[in-house]
Structure formats: C-alpha cells, structure tokens
Length: 346
Image (cartoon, rainbow, N blue to C red; front, side):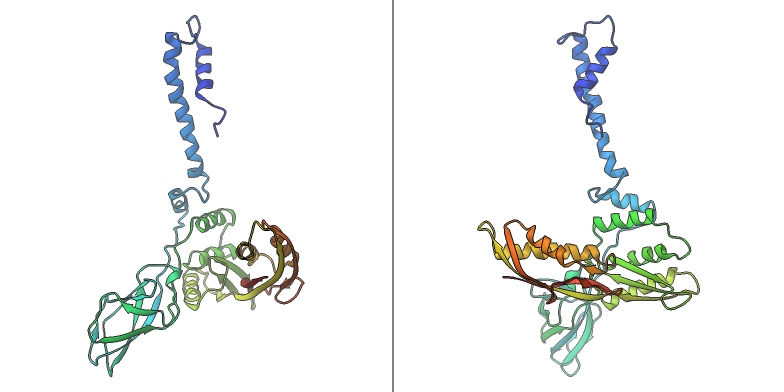
C-alpha cells in the first residue's frame, strides 16, 4: 500500500523542508535525519499488516475469526465420529468406560459407557478421540486395544459416522462474505443458506422456496467437498434450521444425490511426463471443476474436460475421450451434484 515510500524519499522530503542549514551528505543535520527517516519508513511498512486484518482473506489467519466474530459468526469446530463396537470374550467381563480401541492406522475410539459381556458378547458405542472425517472408518476397522483387557478376545465395529473436519479458513471467509453480501431477513433464501452453512459438515447449500406449495421450503446440502452428506449431518442441519425458522414454515432438509462422473481417455505424451502423473493431474483438475459447478450449473461440458486434459504439461494429444461412456455434455438434475468416479488414462 505504501510501496512508493522509502527511507530515502522520506529523508529527502524532510531535508527539503529545512532552510539555512547545511544538509549535505555527511553533515550533522543529514546524519540526524537519516535514522529518523528510517524509523518513519518502518512505521509505514508495518501499516501493510493492517490490510489482511481489515480486508480478510484466506491468508488472514486468526483475524478471520476476529472479523467473523463481529457478526456473530464462529468457526465450525468439527464433530467426532461414533461407532458401535462389538466385543467377544469371557462371560461377565466388564469393558470399562474410557477404554480405548484403535484402527490399524492408529485412530483412537473411546468407550462411552461401561459394558458387561453376557453370553460371551456385548456391544456399546465408542466416540472418536478427535473431530474429523478421517474417523468415519469402515466396518471391521477398529480391531485393536490400546491397553489389553484380560478376558476380552475380540473387538470389531460397525461403520463409524458423523465425523466432520474443523472449518477451513477458506470456508469461514466465504461464509463471512456471504453474510455481508446476501442480506438475510425474515426467513428469506439467504437466511436458510446461513442457517444451513453454520452446521458442522455442511459445505454447500441450495434452497428451494415454495417447493411443495405455500409455506414449504426444501434445503439441499452437501459437504465441504461438494459431495453428499450422511444422515447424521442432515439431522443436525434440520434441527438447527428448525430452531431458527419462522413459525409456520415446513422445512425439508435432504442431502443432494451424487451423479458419478467416470472419465476414460487414451493419450499421447512427451517423455517429460508419465501416464500416472497425467492421471493424477487430471483427477485433481476434474475434482476442482466438479466442485466449482455443484449447485451452480446443471450441465457438465464435455469439451471442458478435453481442454483440461490437453492443458496438462506433457500431454500432446488425446483420443477416445468418454464421459460416462459418451462424448456429449452431461445433464445434472436439480437435486444432484457431480462427483468424480473412475478416471482411466491409457
């Protein structure tokens, strides 16, 4: 913001204001002004730090939270996944509250309440040690004990659900500016968007007013990756909206459905790259494109994917590019979001 101001320019301006004084280089006055000019310049330079504090963006760090707090917006802390654990072992054995069980890669789950094995078996709920989607593990993943419990011979789990990541800086900034740019009043569309986006696990929302007659509202939601959410997130979102909605409104909250996008192509490449590198780059570009059009556009453009493929460094040409088995644009239904499926590059 003050790039044109330098210690030299400040010094020159000060010296130009002095009259009948020796200001030549090396003079007493010149030497006295030099450190003063430098100190003044440091002050100007430090003012640049105010820009991301006042005009926050993804690089503003803690100032994003401080700015958002001015409008009653707080960062979503994420939620912990839960899973039902099934135990086998000695009849009458007690698995104590707080016992920790792990997946093969070290994700910890803590028993919520003590349980006693009856007829050699028992089941109870365990909560993830931390918030995050990584804890939404598949069934049969939790098989280890952090401290061995005598008499307990086996443990397994049903699929863990409900884990969501803490909100990213990008998402919080987007919510802040959506609040400022889209005035929410009296249960209008923007109000429903804000209520939905305030819920952990919700990263995108589409509101359909009067979808089933007067007084009805449908809210479609997706996760931060613009993919469908599980029922637990839907329930949390519905409960939060129900606490805030205008009296008399009938609100339906649903997850958007996934439209899987499968892409196959044959490519010609230079010696500077490899097929696997091209596949990874294309998959990343495809994901970014699909997320950008979720709830925004309802047609996937075939030629856009072709351009994305040719834009990858080292790709000379392609042939036989198909999207979901065809070579035409893909229509996306009003209740769908496109989600990347198989990417086959040969």
